[in-house]
Image (cartoon, rainbow, N blue to C red; front, side, top):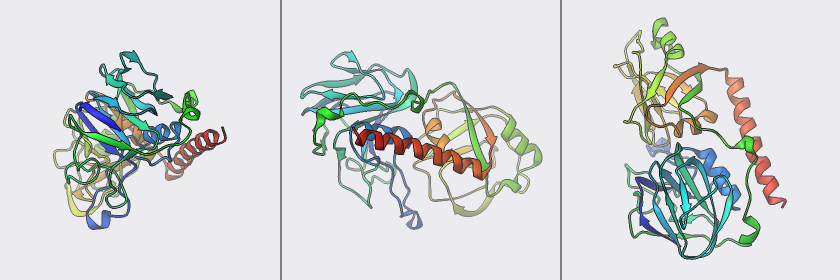
Length: 315
């Protein structure tokens, strides 16, 4: 059991998302940084898709009502356990009555709190993820509030899970500049040569209007050749829409299932977790890669996660 003393800016229950329902208009939701969630779950002995807490920018104050093991991955928001600094990307033991709080953001945007046994909330359409705008899933379909009590699963052999950590190469660094690799979008021909050149050579900046649905970027105008509106079609994760105003929006975990704006590119899957950690003001540049390269990068990331999973299970 975990009691929420203070909820923080935005703390929600998330897993890897609600798959298989986009054809009915239901968004996927799930962790913005699914890489950090998966690593955190492996460190505490869960399966990769177990539900954890996504903690955004200003963290909560939580009290643990039982002994357990946790791991904090993703952003460094200055975590303290009973007033003492907590290591990131490492499983640690928790004693009944201890309190976890956060001093404030140091690097990155979102921390993931994974608990041995996972956060136990009802599954909705096969997922425990919170979709805030639809008030579906998670803890009563909303962000956590003071006084909420979360149940966790019943893990075994907690002592064996303490002190686990991934190789240093598996820990991302979050900076003020991000180079995003992309594939050409399905409506790339709707943009002028000048517009395409602007997209791939100019600098853009993450705006404060960015959220779980999409990251809005500020920068030079991207010119259309045939107009911004199209007959609505499917939206992939990382799709880069460019409305008539000419400024890109990168669609994220809570993206709509279909959209009627031209899409100039799609950010590849392995780069979306880094984007999910970008704060307002972060500088963004785009670089086109081939489909083969994007697939190779995705396979390589999956291999690293699988090796971590096998290495932990073999201990």
